[in-house]
Length: 360
Image (cartoon, rainbow, N blue to C red; front, side, top):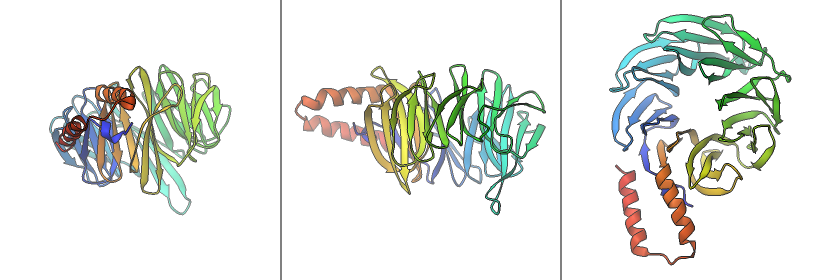
């Protein structure tokens, strides 16, 4: 199936997209490399736009405040208007942000070009008004901050590696897995945590090695059953909960991946690959890897999914959104029409409706 032809809506951020986030109510946030942030409602109408000043890499949403990372800063915005509430400078780049029991957890890091490595990082906790409650500086970069219930964890790079169990205030408990290599990815869900390491190990929060991939684990996704791990060389492995391989795929490096909604009783898995500036997006049945839909597009930088929608942000500024009901209908039509004659009138009408929806 042609994936682009099945989109619910296509919008433009006006600059290269660095982050997308789709909410359960259907609203979509998109942030750009130059700091532009847009919120669309579930029908694709712009609710507001804001300018934060620098690349947006992460967003944390609550009913009262939206907080984004913007270059060196955390920026807090009104969720209804986009008006700025406050702005706080971190030490180095602001990498990640999460809400945590009414407070804000942020990650920053300092990169040294001469050493070609991160030389200092920090975990920060702020209250909802932007007042710093504590900061924990460290030599390691927290590559992945994960949530499990009310607890938060941080996967570490060198020299300590392993991960921290975060508490109300420092110092934090440090855990070291059987293979002492840097953590570079992580994912949580279904009451478990997974960390991906540079030696290819996928380890759970009980320090059990579930699999050893062919290279450094750059992306991890939790599936309805099992998990998906992809390496920096583009080798994707989909495994069950105990690590047994179910299916795999090789190709160009993977720029983003995500577990999506269910369509036609199939749990979807979205994979974006990129070669220089060119990108390719494919959707697979997560259980067996069968290809359901695909399209060529600009390099994908971010994928976000809920139980009903998936949003994708691209280098050329496009923000594409798929809806589960429409996707399922198109998938069913594609299957039923494979042996039926083409109705040119009907096809033309569908094309016009799609064009109207995408240009709204």
